[in-house]
Image (cartoon, rainbow, N blue to C red; front, top):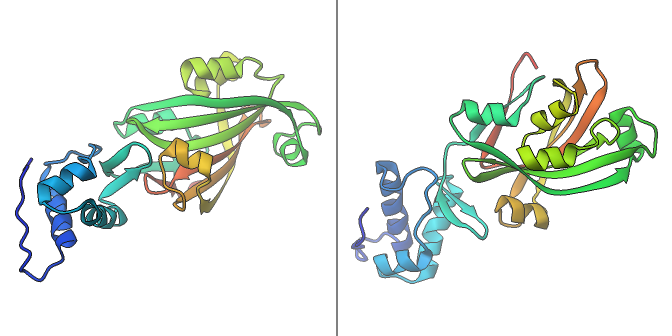
Amino acid sequence: MTTNSTLDRSAGIAVWRQIMETLKAEIVSGAFEKGSRLPPESELAARFGVNRHTVRRAIAALTSDGILRADQGRGTFVASAPLSYPIGPRTRFSEIVSGQLRAPSGRLIGSAVEEADALLSHQLGVPLGTVLIRVETLRVADGVPMIVATSWFEQARVPNFVADYAETGSITTALNRAGISDYRRKETRITAELVETRDAQQLGLALGQPVMVVESVNLDMAGKPLQCTRARVAADRMQLVVSGDT
């Protein structure tokens, strides 16, 4: 990678734009690999002989164009192609990510026991006040946070779910340990909102950025509601694909 660059300040082209074009050309040429972290602003400012504000403007333009990705608290990265995520009757994060040659992982970030309110009792087909397990999870592909999700299950059906998910990082495996060998998607509802503070921290997003909100209900193979989920998806890292057969 080039460590010294000369900017033509007499060319009538803004300095920040020259920096942007230089970095863009290096990214396209492969000097920075997809998913790699960009050098800190201070290092780039020294390289180009400018102040950090000028570098920041160039980075902001590249981020707006989708060439770079800013992860709050982690730095700025060369953006990978968005993960293509099909929405259908069989939606499995680990399988989808692995199928695109990326490494999937999941992490438990919170859990609680609560009683079913009117909405959850309707979605899960259980009486009002039924004891539920609520789990908060973070789904990651190649080390990049993709989804923060809140899911609810009837506690009596999956009493050890929290421990099993914490150990395996897989919803499918945790359900399998509870004797539920398979499940399918009943419905999916997709909306959008601005990211909330806690989700922004987990996903590495700046406040004010959009997330896709995917609300879904899964059924066991007997057709009984098993899980309802409200997932918040980093909109710049994943594209949802709904086929005509869904």
